[in-house]
Every structure is written in structure tokens, then in C-alpha cells.
Length: 328
Image (cartoon, rainbow, N blue to C red; front, side):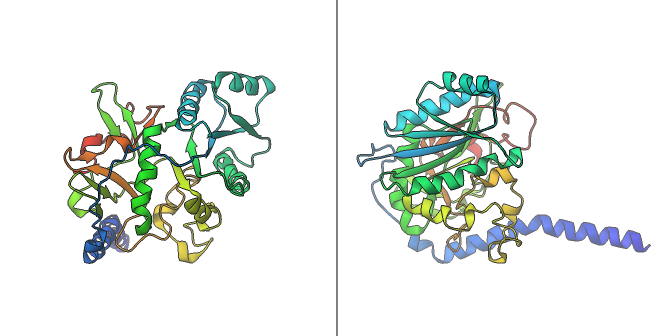
């Protein structure tokens, strides 16, 4: 009888735990509503506007050597090189043979620097080796933007223009322009927002009201497999708690305990950056997507391609929500 009672009690508390996130998100949204009038911008906004100021980007890519993945890596590097002729690309890889390193150099069609990490404590730590290197690069004041990404994420010039133009608006709100990773399903040829595991309800999401054409939407699935920061954001990241792999855990600092970060694996946390650090009251994170009000969908310009296409075309927890249905 006692065991039966304890089992019922366990299931009851487990069911409450499942609803906790929903309750917390609703509380955050109600806090947003109290101050929603402060998030009205009402300005002309063209996200694709060409960036006129000088741009110098440094990009770091973690690549655990796999000859079958070099083709996608090459596409990523070529696209980054097209954003600016001042782009510097650094590829961090594990210890490889001289033949493998030469093969990698030959198959990347643009100028890159390969950083071989000879002695990795564990392969899952490879994405974290870019942090100290970025700290050294940060000392070079001519660098305007810092980019870290996984080896199969393609960002193009329109994506970059969107980020810079959006940052000008979002900066005063302490928010950051976001991207959403997408894949094409081979069966229905539809585009899927792979990191949305459920559909978000537009009316329950915090918004920055731009004009009759656009919102910036603060959604509940901000993971994007990369980060793009200007100097101000990069300084906050590199010299703050988010650059520590233990950030989010009580063992690091109880002031930064966050269940969303605890549940991220070590490799994913390397690109989560400032997502959950110093979040404005009433917002789920600091990341906001551009939403086209007339099309009732996430705008194309903030969509980035996940070239491996492995989620929407295989049975998975991810890759089941079409981009046009992700925020309704």
C-alpha cells in the first residue's frame, strides 16, 4: 500500500513539473504586458539594407574531422567570405594526420586558418577552444563582429545585413537579433524550423512593435547553433559568466542557475552565449526573431540553413514544425 501511495505521489509531482515551464512562461508574459507600451518603436525599417560602415568579421568554426562533412564546411566558409572581403575564418579541429590536414586545406576554396588542437581532453570540448583565441582577437580594435558557428550552418550576406540593421533597434532594449535554423524536407519540399519542438502562440509572446510590417518576436526556442556579436556583446560574453562551460549550474554560481542551460549539452552551450544572461524582465531570453506581419510568418531574412538536413528527414524530436507554422 505504501509503495502504491508513493508511486501515485511521484506521478503527481512529475505532472506538476511538466507544467512548470508553461506557468513560468505565462508569468513572464504577464510581466511583459505590464510594460508593453515601452516596446513601441514605430520606425521605417528595411532589414536588407546594405551596411555602409566598415565591417571586419572573425569567424570560428568547430570541426571534428570527418571527410564526408568537408563539402558542407566549404559551403559555409565560402558564404562567410562573401559577406565581407575582410572576413577571417578560423577552423578548430582535432588532431589529424598531415594528409588529412592537407586534404582539408585543399577542399576549402577560400582562405582559412586551421587550428589543430593536438590534445583534447574530450572531443566534446572542441567547441570551447575558440574562447581564449577570441579573447586575443578581441584586442584588435579593427575587428567589428565576432561569429562562432557549427560546421554545417550557412549564413549569408542578407542574414548579416539583417542582424546589423536589427541590432540598431534592439540594442536599447538589451535584446539580440536571432536566427532560426532551417531544413528542407525531401518528401514535401517544405522548410522546417528545426529547433521549434512545439508551435509558439503569437499572442502570448513578448514583441517589439516596429511598424505595420514587422514585429521582433521573443520566442521560446532560441537555440540557433551559433552566435553573432558586435564588439559590445562580445566583450560581455568573453569576460562574463556565459563564457564558462559551467554557467547555468549552481556549481559555477548560484546566481546563474537556469534549468534551460542545465539541460543543454556541453557542445550546445558553446554557442548559447548570452541567450539567457541578463534577460530583460518579461522576456524568455534575449533573442528576438523578425516576424513579417503581412505574411504571418518568421521573415525569410533571419532563416539560416542547416546543411546536414538531418532532422527534418529522419525521425527525430526536432525538425517537425514547418517554418510557416512555428509562430501562429
